[in-house]
Length: 492
Length: 101
Image 1 (cartoon, rainbow over the protein chains, first blue to last red):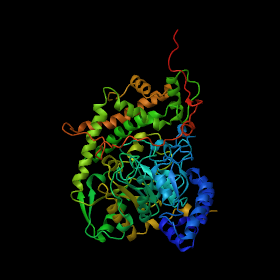
Image 2: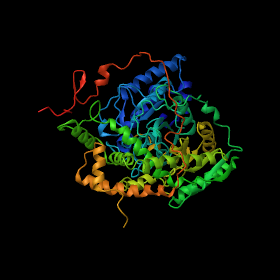
Image 3: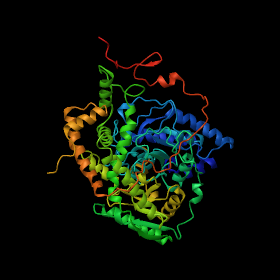
Image 4: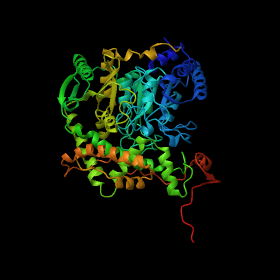
C-alpha cells in the first residue's frame, strides 16, 4: 500500500516505529499530486519546497526521539480561505488572485505547532459561496469517485484531496454545510465544530456568525486528532469560547450503549433520493444494534431554514465583502476616473456571479425599508430554529439525518439555477444557524457507486459525544475503508 | 402571475449601494434571479414572530477588556506589500474630491 493511503493515526504509528519517514511521505504525496491533480483539480497552490524542508525537520525530531509533537510530519491540505503567511490565499476569487497574507490564521499556527506539514491550498467556491466548487474563479474540482460529478462545496478541494489521497487530511470551513456536504459527496469524514470551538482568526470572513473551521479526514479518529490540534480559545477571536478542549480521542471506543439517537421527522421528506433515505435508515438500525435507542424527534421550523440562511448569510457577506475595494490589497480594475468608479469596476471584474448575487441579496435585505421585513424576520426565525434543537436535545443525545438529499450531482447540473443549488444544503444549514456541531461520515453507496453521507448533530460543545457515536458506527461498518477508483489505482 | 418582488430600478439602486457596476444584461439576469430567490424567502412570512427575540449570535457576546498597552504590530512595509498601487508609504487611489473651480 502506498503511504498516501494511510490515515493520520496509521501514519503516526509508522513514523513512530521508524518504518516511514516524513520526507518519504511528503514526497509520495507530491508525486501523487503531480500525477493526479491535473485530473482532480483539488489544489490551487502546492507548497512543495517548504513541505520538503519541514519534512526533513520532522524526520530529525523523530530520529532524535525528543520534541516529537502530536502531528509530527503529517502532510495536510488547507482550504484556500485560511491565511498562510507568505503563501498566496485566493479564496477562489479573482479579487484575491495575488494576495499574499502577512500572517497565519490561528489554526495554521496551531497545526504547525503540532508538527503538521502544509502540502498546499485547496480549491473552493469563491469566498466559500457554493455547494459544488464550480464557483471557483480558477478551475472546477472533480469528484474522485466519478470525474463527471462535483465534489460538493464549498470545501470541495479539501474533501477531494482527502478522498483521493492527495493529503492525509485537510481543514475546511463550514458556513452552511461547506465541510459536511463535500465530505458526504466524496466519501470522507468532515466535522463542523460548535460555533466558537475553533478560532476564526485568519479565516477570510464570509458570514461571521455562522463560519467555523473544521477537519476533513479519512476516518473519525483522524477528525478527532485534527480537531484537538486546532480547538480552543484564542485572544485574537473574541467569539472563540474560553472552554477547555477535551481529549477527543479518549471519547472514541466508548460505544453507544444507552445513548438516545433522535430522528427528526422533518428531515425525511419528499424529494430525497430513495437510496440516500434507505442508507440512513440502515445506519439507524446499525446504531440500534450497537445499543443506541432511536427515537423520533421534531424540528418543526426545518422548512424555513434555507430561507432564513439566505437572508442572514448574504447580509453578513455583503458587509464583510465591502472591504474588497481595490485599495489596500487585492485586484484593482484600471480606468476608474474617480474612486467611486474604481470601486464599482474593481468589484464588477473581481467578483464572480454567485458572489455578486449574494452581495446584492444581502445589501437588499439590509437596505432602508426592507431591514425589518427581511433581515429582522430571519433573525427571529433563527431563534425558533435554535429552540427546536433545544427541545429535541432535552430528549436525545445526538440527532441523525442524511447530510445531503442526494449523492454527487453532475458538473453543470445546478449552475443555472441558484435556488436549486441552495436547496442542496437543506439538511446542513440549520446546524450553522443554531451554532451546533455536526459531522458527516460515509454510510453507504448508491447503485452508481457514489458515496452517501450520514450526518450526526450534537449539543453545543459536545463534539466528544458526536465523535463517539460516529466512531462506533464507523467501526461497525466498512464504508470508510473503500477507496475511489482514482485513489485505489497507484499513481501512473 | 404574481407581482415581481424586485424591479430593475431597485436592482440598480442596490448595485449602487453595493458598489457593483453591472452591465445591462447582468442587471436583468440579477433581477430575475433575485425575484425567484425572494419569492422563495417569502415563505418566512407564514410564521408569526411577534414575540420572538432576534438571534444575531448564538454564543453570548460580552465585551472583552484588556489593558491598553503598546504591543508590536506589523511593519508598515508588510502592510503595504499587497497594495495594488502605492506612492511611498501611502496607498494611492484615484481622486476623491472634485478640484475647486
